[in-house]
Amino acid sequence: MTEETGLTSIYLENQPHDCVFSPNNENIYIGLLTGEIKGFSFNETSSQRTLRVRPTKKSCRGIDISQDGNCLYSVSKDGSIHFIDATTGQIIEAKEKAHEHSISRVKLTMPNLLATGDDEGVVKIWDTRTPQPLRQYTHHFDYISDFYYEDAERKLLTTSADGTLSVIDVRSNKAEPVGHSEDQEDELLSIAPLAGTSKYAVGTQLGVLSIFNSKQGWGDCVDRIPGHPQSIDALVSLGPSILATGSSDGLIRVMGVLPTKFMGVIGDHGEFPIERMKVSSDSKWLASMSHNDELMMTRIDDMFEDSDGEDAAEEYAVDVTQDKDSDSDDDEEMQSEEQEEQEEPEEPEEKPEPMKKKSKKNKHFLEDDSNSTFFDDL
Image 1 (tube, helix red, strand yellow):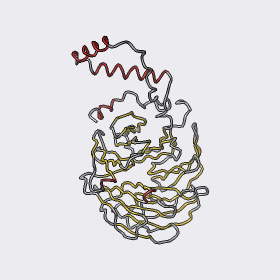
Image 2 (spheres, rainbow, N blue to C red):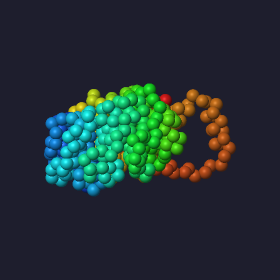
Image 3 (cartoon, helix red, strand yellow):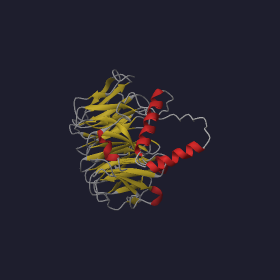
Image 4 (cartoon, rainbow, N blue to C red):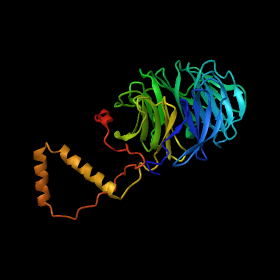
């Protein structure tokens, strides 16, 4: 794929609210402001619409898909839930008054268990085979902003604008969470795991990234990472302790956590805030959406590959130069180092290890960015 001919966006004609990738092919499904759900097949160069259905006239605010990719689960502003055939668009089942208030999020947990959360903080767990919910949770009092499901422990993590995070055991018969944080004194807007650790990152309204550690309980965060100039509305995990953050300033940033390191900007939605981001099941694509009428598609599979070519050598040279410049004010230390080098016998210079290469498909990645000053103190 090249920058000139590669797929960079999918035009939708209306504003998207949420999307989900198929788990077994290159299809994506998008819920729109108009209540429509559109499906597209795509490849490296183009996309083609394969599905269009409008189960309700109210906006589709959340969407998820079954593990076999055959059934879509959509939730709406009117409080309804619809089960839709992902191939034909046929409505399999409709729950018209599933919630008394507008539903904000939906997440499939176990194969037949569905979680929904609404604007008043109510979370319901459904068995997709039965008409009524199994349980209802009312410990939140403001809208549910995000879900993350930890399959290994059968735990559903929820964030809310009431400033708290909670943990629900989807197997439990009790309508109480197994963990509930203290008030963080800020709206919690998004959540993603720090892969390879027991920690989770939570995006906030003030632009601080809060870190929770499940091994130390859920009462309070264990760390706070400032740096974003505006709210962190969307989070996804890209690798071991690597996150993509979507902010109200329209930028998609990549950052490392533990240790904290700003790595670059890979997407720009201009003046519009980023509402949602999703990663494909093969970790090849990042889909992001804002208030315009398109879905941005960003290739991410090559961002962290090792390179032994000229790009790596050039980046290594730049890094060495920058390191030397940053130490230029310490003359005495430099002189001492020069004397030690003269006294020691000369040894063959070691070849530098390959650096992470730039993504040629995402020209913003690891390039100089005017907004990087926000991360100088991290």
